[in-house]
View 1: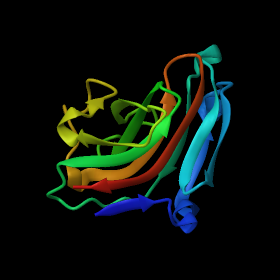
View 2: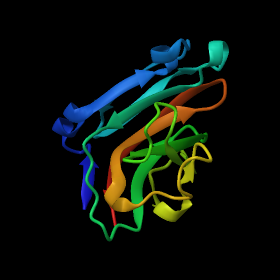
View 3: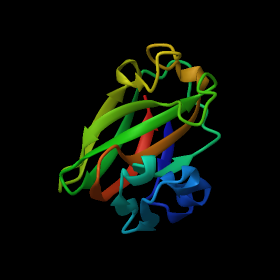
Length: 156
């Protein structure tokens, strides 16, 4: 099942960009659709307890048999994340994350749901597909200039 396909620019209409500024951080950036992809770029700063920029799609419903998310990405050779929020991630700082490296060439990366790590000990070890409510492309956790593109994301 295709979750988002940015080869169609209208796919971006339901995605929301935000930074750690919502909690006092100082990271800056933008998410735009260009060249048939969602591009997340900006300055990630851990100053003032910050450290992220992200583009998030809410109201996600995955088929219950979903075992993985597959993404088509490219970037600047750095490490990025897909974050999931579920019915169990009640606090704003709760999420599940899976890391990937965005090489300079387009690549497809399979991220098994069982490999998504919880942000805290209060959450189950891995997310259940039927509980997923949002998915996000995230630059996170360290001071760096981010530049990553997501062409599509699907559930399989």
